[in-house]
Image (cartoon, rainbow, N blue to C red; front, side, top):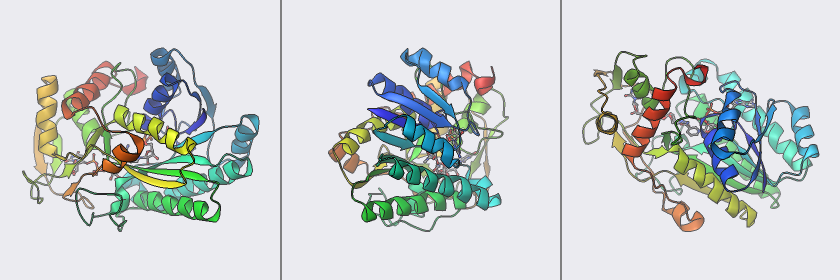
Length: 338
Ligand code: NAD
Ligand code: WQD
């Protein structure tokens, strides 16, 4: 299939492009490089021996989108482009609503006008808010998000649902990711956050590589087995493969569907520290800090719907996730700037 991947030089996008090319799909990336690096395209080529198309452009620019869709008849779009820093979204809500929502509206308009009505969207477990129950199934009601970033995901899901209701020619797959970590086994592409990382695994790997002194563990009085927050960490390559499986669903004319992409297994912050140390042999010093506002006790998926309907199941365990995150960080201590 001919696939347009928005946000394809980013963390999850780049891994997905690798899997798409490996499966023989034709891929063009559209990315404005606001949170990624064009050298990712070279690295993808080195892994797959195929160079994806690349357009340096913005989903908020309708002319660029129209040109892309009139130049090539894409079979589907995988839509990763978006801003994702939770804390920054609280400081700059309009920037987040503008980039994520206005950008997505542009994309959907241009797709519809040019007859491409198949889309896979990067949603998030954040739409469940404080989950009504765990493990979280897709029937779990959406909740109150604690930040504008989360609301953009929740609202875009609604926009795509309404679009599908208005016109059944659309095929929409909403993928709700849990906590992606890990990196391609080559150690040549991976997560490359700007500044001090907000998320746990990049913080841990930057402590391991000596860029940061120690990990702050945000709270040890949660209602979990050791008091630290529990999440469903999923290897980014498993997540990427989930998108390839979802494409087959789109191709079959599936209408609107929603899937959790997680492993079904929860790990606490201290479980991650322990597994990282055991997988890599590198010690992670840590201190207990107060809870981070907006955090919840535990969040993990029931991923059985994706297994039943997409034939997809996460295969990579927590040790492999830790080892692969470390290989990427160790080989690229300063990300793509080395
Ligand atoms: P990322 O920041 O690495 O990738 C996003 C990419 O989108 C970047 O390359 C960025 O340059 C690009 N981009 C942003 N705004 C754009 C615009 N207006 N036009 C064109 N390109 C633009 O993030 P990621 O971790 O790979 O996440 C990919 C998607 O998955 C995002 O939509 C994110 O919200 C969603 N998601 C991520 C996580 C996570 O924990 N990483 C979890 C759930 C959902
Ligand atoms: C995981 C656990 C922290 C950093 C976020 C977004 C969510 C989704 C994924 C996009 C928690 C603890 C963290 C640190 C710590 N993104 N922690 N010290 O909060 O589950 O989810 O990323 O959609 O929307 O909210 O992930 O990696 O930030 O935190 O103790 O320095 O690690 O308290 O328990 P989170 P995370």
